Image 1 (cartoon, rainbow, N blue to C red):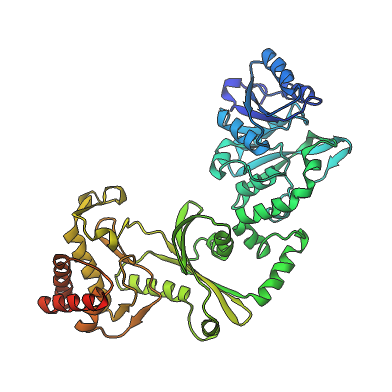
Image 2: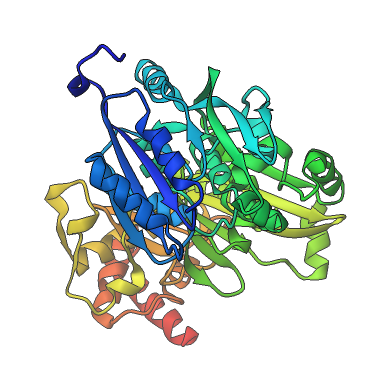
Length: 506
């Protein structure tokens, strides 16, 4: 690669966070300058140094146009790396700490591997140590299972800037071994790691190194990676990484003997969804996602692999129901999932169900979760009442339905409820927040665990439709006419019944 025109070689950005590294920085920078690769930029971050480190850095920068200096208040290595990469222009990123050394041939060899193999995400060298300890650091052959338990990739490993962007960079809350969490983010759902055959990186062991200073905080790191990568740990160990890391699978299996769970996917085409659903208790406990409803039950929008899902966490039932739901009756989560699919099969729209999960504590039902795709309908029935029109412009794919009148959606809602009743189903929580609409002519019914099944006559149908949905006389008449037409009833009689039952409810 050295013989190729440097303009044809991809730019590599070497990033160096610097914090009080005066005794070592000059040696590190000379090592970097000795790299035999012609298309480099070298970025240094002053992370709040209080010694003479930056005087050394300025001296080198004055002699080497490839070196650029930046400064930030002390925020740690993760923030320094992230801020440097934001300034970087390279296709590939190579972090080097300010006290370590690199061999001249490493960069060219790593670039060659990455250029030839798109499936390779990380290229790492063989590494030895010098200073307080000496000798090669022998890492096991890479596997995501081993990486999930401990870091087996050097911090000085090369990767694509695009992958840094994809995972959101280094996590600034990790107090130590932040590169481990970064590799987990990059590799948890696939990607290869290549270790080069020669020793090309030298790790300095000294008493003031961060690894020595922060060893007592490693339990914090385990807690953080559990919160940030629950799907990975569900897949690899059946639950969280324990502080006794080698015992994680055993301890999680023991826990499941007394806390059995059942997880059912509607569509198992994406196997990673199974681990997402199993990890829902951790997502809720950690406050992930966006809360859209929180009372006794809680709804959150949670992202996963580029998609957004709406997850309903049902509250723990009372003691009697914990026994009933544990063995004799389907959970609310299971009913919600099955009933949504039932509606869709009958041509009545609801957000597509994805999965449900229940967990028991011994013989007693614990929490349960229902997962659906996020609806594209931007409005609820509550938004409709009192408005002159609904602007669908941002929601939607069909340009013929950019602006719909209130009357149009009132009729669509009435027709949807009529189809539900004609199919022999009653939604016992047909309230203003459980009817969604928009996205063209789409109306969706949600919160379905209280669906009941029997023949629905005019009286019951009008009561079910009207008693929890406020409306003006004009709005009620429009809905009554559309409902009656869809079911073959008398429109005036439907209107009178709806008015009567709504007043009784009030």
